Amino acid sequence: MPLADTLKALPDQMLDAMELTQQVVLTNLSAGTATAQALSRNLPALPFADRLPDPVLLTDQAFDFAAKVMASQKDFSVKLVAALRPIAPTAPASSKPAATKATSTK
Image 1: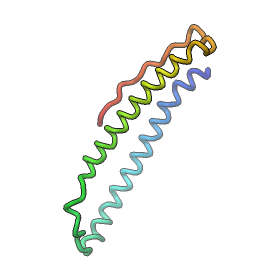
Image 2: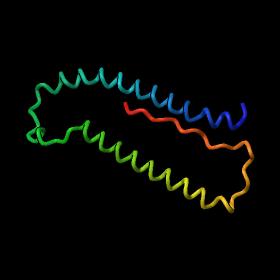
Image 3: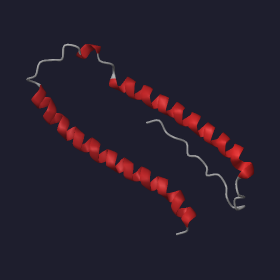
């Protein structure tokens, strides 16, 4: 397989492996949660539990921020490459920027 094809396929393979690992973690965590619930029934409630922030909201906020950081970094990187283009060696004519995939919000 040519290097360009390997480099193009690698990110998808990495994402596939990451998603498989996530599924394994979630499956095992679900099994462990039942045990934890049974064990925690006899523990007293946390006195400040009602003041803890919503974990789903915190997760959404963190990933919204991360998306903004990534967009800013991408914009900076594109401008940086453009600024360096005059001193960069000429790329082969077949080099084209890779199309970006639309990301889904699950």
